[in-house]
Length: 284
Image 1 (tube, rainbow, N blue to C red):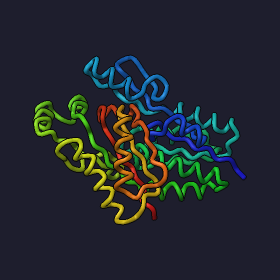
Image 2: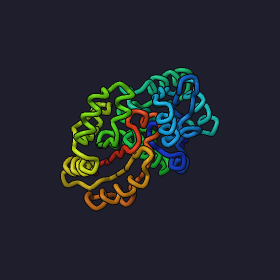
Image 3: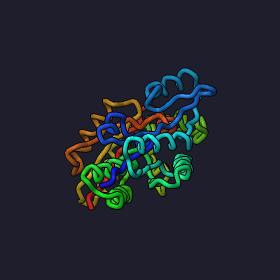
Image 4: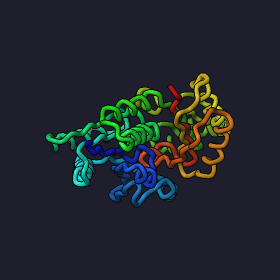
């Protein structure tokens, strides 16, 4: 039986502990403040990201992993005994990560490496990698792992609620005037994943109503079905994420485990602190 390694990037919102427990290798997204470079999961997290932005008033840029980083990850997997690799990447419509992973694969033409554009982000992507790892750990084939993970990706639903508009202003997606007007009305955007991109779905009044609206949107999409997988992602607001998880458990047909994860800096830089996301995979 062949040994198949699972690789993904840190925009999957999988913690190092979860990735380790599933034997998944994480390739990190880079964060650059001018000439200073930081590595997600190594020397920067959401809290340190926001502290620096608040101190300097400037947003960093994000950097997709280079082909060389993916090449090292592939080589490490093969040196560890893998016969084949499945690599799950953030949506190619949101990042150059997938392209870098493909270029690295071309450097090893004699090896079996499947690079997947998940057309998703955060735990939508992470749940795909976890599902594949479950299949492999159970003795399944690469084909079976790909089929199960693609099914997860096709069913995944994502909704997010921003707590601040500051980062949309810093990123040039919103003017200060627009943000001030929205602040006066206490408007909070609700986001969703649409065709591989995070987009604004609607606007609500107050953060509390935005969270309730996310639960309502998920309930409507379920149409009576239970949730096979469920996760809460947050940007430096763990206590609120845990409280929100309890609200979700009361309102929706949840699985036994609700995964709570940090959004991670490569994504959080676009949302700001206090963002909560709800990611669910309805049962078939």
